[in-house]
Length: 224
Image (tube, rainbow, N blue to C red; front, side):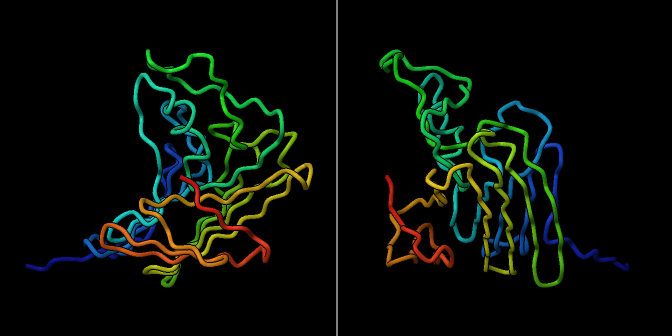
């Protein structure tokens, strides 16, 4: 009996959901990643354009939050940009759109939706490039239109995976006013160890080391 083996791709983009999946294999010790760009349906879509997830021996970079219903955590955090591995631009006075869901009976119904500097568009990012070679997978995505037109002139992310377990993330961000605070978010499941612009974490049997290359004066802060 002759069996033909077909070489599997390292990555595949599903344009309906706007999700690009990457994997080094299908084993327990393989590396898996997800990148979010584009999409068609708005149902259950988050404000998470240019977001990524990395998994190797546990979640190295995860999608944070949970979905209580009812509960303010859903519309005020879980679905918002701040809960994802994306970038935020804080424009004072911005009123962000309301996501579905409401407060539980014990929660304060008068709480205002927080201005966390996130996105206001669900389906306005565009996958600019998706290239796969023997050595790497390269992705570029423009999420400028996902942010308020008065605060963002350019938000483009380039994401490169050098198989099996090296990632390079390069963001180009231009705000209408340079004083608008910009944050690069990265969510982990355990408290990281921070030293200057480098930090590391160990959890679920795995480890990741993250180093900020640019800008040189970047400030790393642990939150939560």
